[in-house]
Amino acid sequence: MLGLSAVDAGLTIALQPLAMIVSSGVASSLVQKVNGKYLLIPGLLALAAGTAYLDWAAHANSGRWDFVPGLVISGLGMGCIWTPVFSMATRDLPAPLAGVASGVINTIQELGGVLASAVVGAFLQNRLALSLHDQAVAASGSLPAPYRAPFVDGFSNAAHGGFEVGAGQTGTTVQLPAQVQEIAHYVFTHAFVDAMHPTLILPIAVLVLAAASTAFVRSRRAGAVRVHEEEAAVA
Image (cartoon, rainbow, N blue to C red; front, side, top):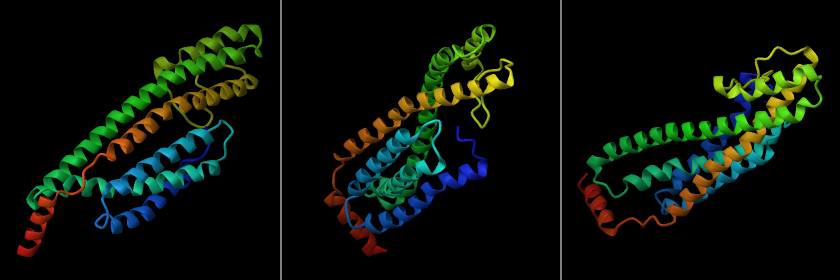
């Protein structure tokens, strides 16, 4: 919606993985000293908070730097998630099973990513279809009478062919005069932002729920600790 090039968009989002690199180093040094859930819980909540900030800061006229705090906070949170997850999942397993367990975790992670993307994408498209119609109806009053019905119909039927989001996108295939294209672009950008706000609530809620459930993770079992110490002694 900001009209950024692929390079500019990438450089803006790069702040998130850079922050993740920093927090990952800290988490890696602490994961063997403290229960992993004490890193995982704040990590999940930080990712939720950063995502909530992005949701709050997103407007049709936002600037690229408006998202910096949210990207940094979410990146720091992500760095405190992956290392503790793998450590907690494999800590009580015999060493020969560690590789298999790591593969299972990776598989679940990939499946979760695919499922989550599909659910969030479907919800976004549903909300966008409704928002496009509402915004088109509201904006059509400023158009000449002959253009109003095709204008609203074009946006209302946009969902049937999917959405292509990018600079200059209008959301409709209706051929409009140049002066009307600006109104069409306004409708699409504002509808997309309106649809994005409730959509991001879904992953935020999942992150908060995950953080709450992590609080019930048990400490490392004493028996498992003894087994690992014996294995280390033998090695």
